[in-house]
Image (cartoon, rainbow, N blue to C red; front, side, top):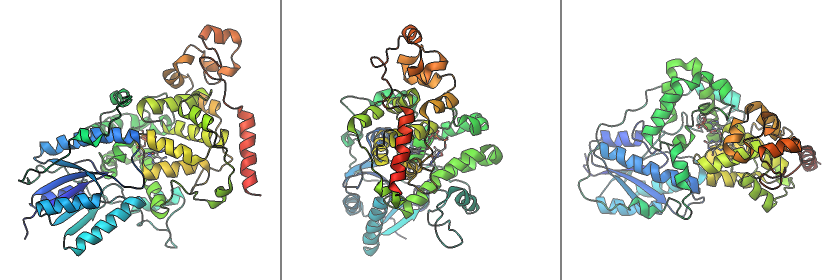
Length: 472
Ligand SMILES: Cc1cc2nc3c(=O)[nH]c(=O)nc-3n(C[C@H](O)[C@H](O)[C@H](O)COP(=O)(O)OP(=O)(O)OC[C@H]3O[C@@H](n4cnc5c(N)ncnc54)[C@H](O)[C@@H]3O)c2cc1C
């Protein structure tokens, strides 16, 4: 048996618990080198908010590894070259990793695996970030599922119900000192301006923060989740686990396992984890999910990609308070509530007739949970161009959605403070408020808060006509 070191290549699995690649390496009793590569020359760079999160998450992983005798080595460059250099430097004869599923990453991993295997370097890959592999759950006709409900019914039968792996107690040390790029050299944090520091108070980044968020959520809010999940005004209505999942600080298996204590109570919540799994099925089978309509009849859609309107949507200046609150929540915290994501996305696509891909790009750049599968699949879902999508003609009304899901206007008041003195009756539709009411609330439409960027009724009819035109 060899005593050469094993490289564990961390990617979107920045945790020490339930990390099969790490555990397998540790169990071999050979020295373990823990590596993270900030990959260059990839098809799609990480968005700015994701880079910010990554900085803190790597710091947290580094501390966790230190606590069990390991050390995180950071390098920047092409994965292929970095691995090559490290193998040369250390005599490692095995590389372990947990699988990833977007096309670019899969191509990279397959090429590396083929090359290393040919050079008699062992490569082992593991399932760690999904409950079941995207190719596993098949229909009776041996196809992948394109509709969520039957998918999730079938998927639950194939879920691996073994316990999640505990964090290793110690990592066998690799004795030679290895060069590691100082984290600041990775330049992941924004500098001028430093918009990252305003997001910091909202999050406890890293494995420990993820585990606490899960525990706290299961200790209470999960009971009201079926109703509260639609209420952006309720601080703990949802788990806010998405960025932790996106970076693999916690695994879906850990979540599933924790929910087993009371599966009935957690059923709705677990179904959302199911949507994440389903999104990965769609991405795996449709590598261009972020750029290509799943339903090709949408290719003929006559988008009106107006730069100024896109900018106003991005900045939360549309004149529709619920939409603006959502876009400003995103800017302020790096996250946006799911109900609001559906409304803001629908507004961009249907009220402004801007191509869903512009919205996908903005979310990719600004969300701390930006995920190659969930983001693309969800944008296509809202657009109506996706698998099992909302029909295009379902056009969310941006003010009645606000009245239903933010009935007292608390969410709007938090993120659109210039409207905070408006009475509830007008908080979601300030343009209907009498002049005196506006005056008393200090709101000057067109001056300190915009008039609606487009009339709702007109926009709705225009969107339906544009859709109809694609079918003629
Ligand atoms: C236009 C649009 C873009 C989106 N982009 C992303 C994205 O980039 N990354 C992302 O993780 N989610 C995305 N979502 C899905 C969803 O909005 C977020 O997962 C959710 O808001 C995260 O908050 P939470 O962790 O509190 O969710 P919870 O309600 O607590 O749900 C638990 C977990 O289930 C998963 N989940 C929940 N809803 C969905 C869903 N509809 N689709 C897929 N997975 C889901 C997430 O991993 C989430 O953390 C998007 C939705 C829309 C409408």
